[in-house]
Amino acid sequence: MKNRQTIRPVVKRALCTGCGTCAGVCPRAAIEMVVQKDRYVPRLDKSRCIQCGLCFDACPGHRVDFDDMSTDLFGDIPQDVALGRYLGCYVGHAVDPQVRYNGASGGLVSALLAFALEEGLIDGALVTRMRDEDPLRPEAWLARTRSGILAAAGSKYCPVPAGTALAQILNSEGRFAVVGLPCHIQGLRKAEQCIPRLREQIRYRISLACSLNYSFRGTERFLAGCGVSPAAVDVLQYRGRGWPGSMLIRLRDGTEHTIPLAEYYRELRPYSLRRCTLCSDMLGELSDLTCGDAWLPDLAQTDHQGSSFAVTRTDAAEELLELAAAKQVVELSDLGLDQLLASQGHALFKKRKLSARLELFRLARRSVPTYQQTLLPPTRADYLHSLKLYAARYALAGNHRILRRLFRSARRPRPAAPPAPVPPTEALSRR
Ligand SMILES: Cc1cc2nc3c(=O)[nH]c(=O)nc-3n(C[C@H](O)[C@H](O)[C@H](O)COP(=O)(O)OP(=O)(O)OC[C@H]3O[C@@H](n4cnc5c(N)ncnc54)[C@H](O)[C@@H]3O)c2cc1C
Image 1 (cartoon, rainbow, N blue to C red):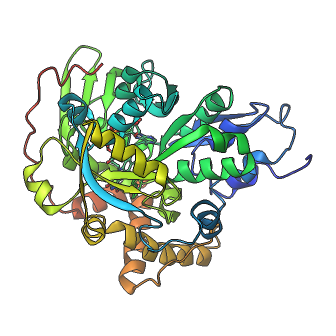
Image 2 (cartoon, helix red, strand yellow):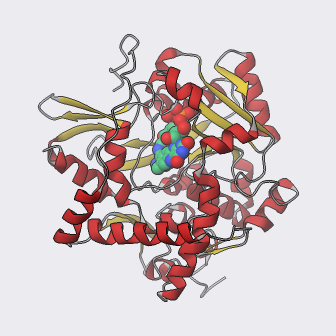
């Protein structure tokens, strides 16, 4: 078991996703996730490390064998290149108006978790909330109450080392749900391959759809543009307050600002995390259940409270949705596969663009992750898009003031803000 590879080369080759799985599974608690520049990276305490190799084996940063894992988990390789394995596609939301209004896109995930807990299907759920003492930084934790689950609702558009909380699961008895981005779920599945007990402990793996995530610098620069110093922030919620929802910034002096999603998301976009641009998995293909915004043309016009799409990949997820719908905790209707994929155009784009990005990285002699799965051949537009993306990152994220100004002035004017949602009673008193 000794002298095996540690997480260090992954970090050195800039392949770390910051998911925190390595820290969560380390048997000697030798790894801590620390903020470096604008994201989380693992810091290894050599004096504690026994070089067992678990951190490297569970790491999704350097390699994910999607096809082998799919065969192992689901019995075959995925039917659909963009979506992965699926049993059913649905659109729906929480029935409780408060849960729906406070969720990112209809509170489906939080409603399902709270239901599973109350029905005794799970003993807790690994979720992510913003820290009370440092409201711009997230923390993953094991919620064991309905209120704990609901307090963690809403998307966090910043680096989240959710895998760190796997240590809490490994130190507990019982069965759990884990919510995370596709990289978190990849790490979880790899960890389960290494630790069979973990596999038995996890009843539901719920992935959020994710086209890209953004650095802390993105949020900080956005706040600076609003004239807000990070030290003045008491509460930061990226989403909630109906659909598409808004960012809530509550300052220590009690002042509140709400900024529509469309407005701040545009500003975050250039601050995508470099490693996220090398990811092939927008729809959490190794999950039991994937949920994301139901960006369907009809709903986008009429739904101001929120709806998520849901893709089930396992019987466990199908049964959970069926039970929750039967007990009127969630409302669900069938969604055609074509409708789903049309609303999530990125999913297919990712499989094509990634081929272009990998080639660009190889040309620049940079390390790339290994994915064992089908990617699609890129078009010329994919190469151009990728070059533009990296040029924008270089201009905006670095210290290149002139380039930054040029890039900002070349950007299109902002779209009109989406219509304001109607808040149900007490909707804003989440905390
Ligand atoms: C970085 C990011 C990118 C996304 N990109 C897309 C996209 O391209 N297309 C799309 O359709 N949907 C995307 N989503 C998903 C979408 O924003 C909603 O989270 C999803 O629709 C579920 O909404 P809900 O109301 O059902 O969940 P909620 O009831 O709001 O519950 C969300 C759950 O996810 C957990 N969570 C939130 N943020 C994170 C995070 N960063 N890491 C780990 N756990 C987290 C929360 O703790 C909570 O348990 C993204 C989400 C994130 C965080």
